[in-house]
Length: 456
Image (cartoon, rainbow, N blue to C red; front, side, top):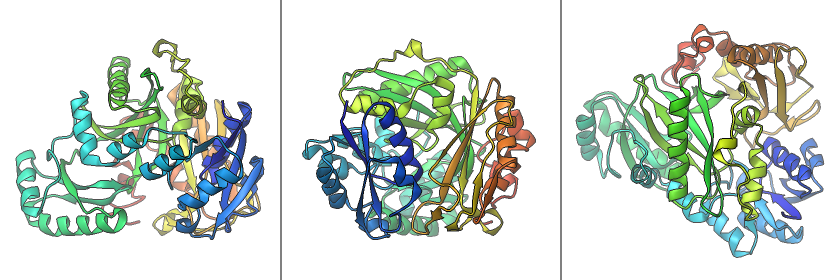
């Protein structure tokens, strides 16, 4: 195992990684921007190195500054967390060139899965069903129209280098295609430096279900079950749960094994997530693979008892998986709410500021509560970065118990100084369809938390 590890990230994910490092006897080292200097989350680290100004391009995205920090701190490994450089193949390659361990997959796997068209084609060859659409990139609106007419409207135009809903447009009829193609391509080029688009059939009323996989250096691959991530606004997740109320044990076992085998087949290593879309008839289709630790990983940890960050570190240290598929057991149910410093009533507008009070009860039952956070009273939420301030994860013996435990914790929370997304979480948790487990990705729109066009 490593002696010292640098976390190339900030905030909640940095604290999460540091916690596992300490348990394993690994000394955690932080990097921070000038805006984060003195932040309370840095207290979780043995050393903190300031790497640049507030803007992420000049700090958390500055590869050379991060690599120099690792050298100065005599680290043997770098964990990228999520966001920032976590899925940057060039950064992963530079880490390895310096004879450091990159806690994540090989650069080639990151690059392959980062290209959505290549990922679709690779998944299909590995035996995962893909959503009907174009075989590759479409060159212009006319070709996109031909594909759309073949698979049937409505369709989605999607950026091959995309993520977070950018470079994506819904098209309901042929007359809309030319303008949508132009807008999506322009947005993708601006966001990712690549305006390439492909076409997918739009599955309405679908459910977003993802499988957590682990693959070691020796080709051994397992899955840790699935997470339901259908509560989203503008393609950003609000609530996740494990297991999905939509899957039965046989489907879970079949598609989990297929996802793990597909990851191994492409030379993947580390923890990864195979994201799928379930249609109203119960068919599952591959969407993409996230080649990093997921924000929502705690719900899987809570039902399996497996520390996913620990598994990442052991795989990066060239240790074989100590867990066989038969060792994985799902115990009860877990639900997570992502608390952001955002004003729900104002279109989920990010609202930076100073947190005057931060109290979330963990003892109201009936299940247990886990809180992953990097803030406390007096902490500043800077305007430069993601607005996530905490994740509240509830575990119960049953799904109903987990829902009630999370609802009580959120209803009893006292967070002052910045608005939070708690009102949106409570609205979802009190919804009849959510409680029945029959909801889909339209739930946030149906509850009028945001409208179908993406407004508030």
